[in-house]
Amino acid sequence: MKILLDRREAAQVAADATLVGIAEGSKDAAFAAALSAEDTLVGGALTRAWESKEVRGRRRETTVFHRTDRAGRIVLAGLGPRPLTAEAVRVAAAECAKSMRGKGIRTVALSLASFTSADLAPDLAVRALADGLILGSYQFVQYRANADSALEEGTIALGRAHGGEEGSLKRALAEETKLLDAVLWVRDITNTPPNIATPAWLAEQAESLTELGLKVTVFDEKKLAELGCGGILAVGGGSRNPPRMVVVEWPGGSRKGRTVAVVGKGITFDSGGISLKPDLGMQEMKFDKSGACSVLGILRAAAVLKAPNRVVGVLACAENLPGGGAYRPSDIVRTYSGATIEVTNTDAEGRVVLADALAYAIAKYHPDEIIDLATLTGAAVVALGEHIGAVVGNDARLEGALVDAGAVTGEQLWRLPLTDPHREMVRSDVADVKNSVEPRYAGVLMGGVFLEHFIGKTPWAHLDIAGPAYARLGTLKFCPPYHPLGATGFGIRLVSEYLVNGPADR
Image (tube, rainbow, N blue to C red; front, side, top):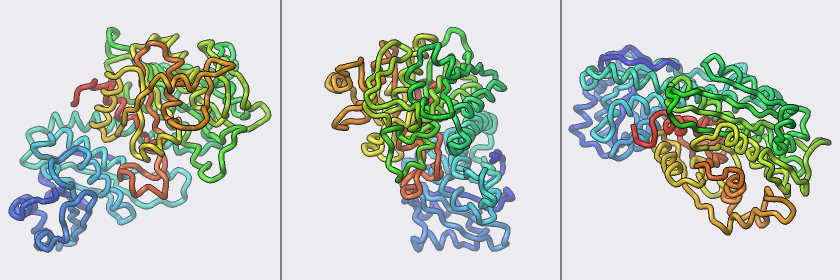
């Protein structure tokens, strides 16, 4: 989808629909003054609908009016109560983009002045509008013969209020669309089914990033054995599709900057292995590669946005199946760091592959800090639902900075504690640690303290994105409207915000 800027007022831009934001509780006089041009085009219907309370400006409220000249539609997008936030604008734009799908609306003009206020600067509003339109219009249609028509072009009309800021707003829009391109690319990769998206295929997607100046190194099963990556090899041993570890490097805009490692869980399909999952919901397990896919998106964004610091991405990719070579409960696995894992449940495989990837990233690149993203535990979904990710770690500053970055991008994180009693629980009687604990209480924290064992003193944050990484049909209506059915690309925008702009707000 293409997003443009235009110095004219929205009502002057030729489009299939004109989109105007309206806040809940707006005064009648303010409503009439702000929408006089649009109201004239629909014969006063906007004012009548507002006065009769058919339109209230509530969040996710979308109301369509047809112009009397039959030249298009006027769409009112509810922004909810003030103060106006970027998330309210993002949600309104996405709600409208989704509501226009399949209705022959291919172009839309948006009145920027109606989406800004003293609380929300125009550059943040432009970014939020782009987020909502582009992410809300996404559909995974590669394997469908027919798809609903969707928006193809959006024009953000600056009008008299913001026409003088065109240069800075163009720069903001250009940055945001580059970032959103990475998110859409990752959504496609993550949605790709497991008969196509094998570990080797995922490595090929990473190799395509060399065109952007990124260095990509792929370790096959033979090289993994030489390195001593017993965790990745164990998890991938039951599949005829052998595992891979992939390293993607961005050198950074300044050699004097920090080195940040970003590690992702890339289980291309998770049957649970010998500890087989129930069949209900197993079709969702193609999304168990979401963390690794998001790492690819983060590295792509780092390249196109020229992130100032060096960024190293490490993907731990395997397919967890119950074949003849599958690892078993009671196996002891030696990892890259030399530490051993007692396998008590083969369905707790994500932490086993991450053990190798985290230790390798630290030993090889000596990062100043390390972040991992993983659909690690169902417990995260039980605790926080499907639109909030959990964050644990050993560095309060890093954890807090990521939470703050998520507040900017609309990707919520919630911090949880790691304590000594939790650490005691993952200790094994026959190895250094065990990968699953009974009873299965505090599952997010058990996963966190397990991973912490392979971190050492490097500042680290673990993002458990099992909830927001993908949206299910049964609960889609409760998710943000810019989350489509299937993969969301969660984490790309928030980690990129942190890497490019630092802990401070834009």
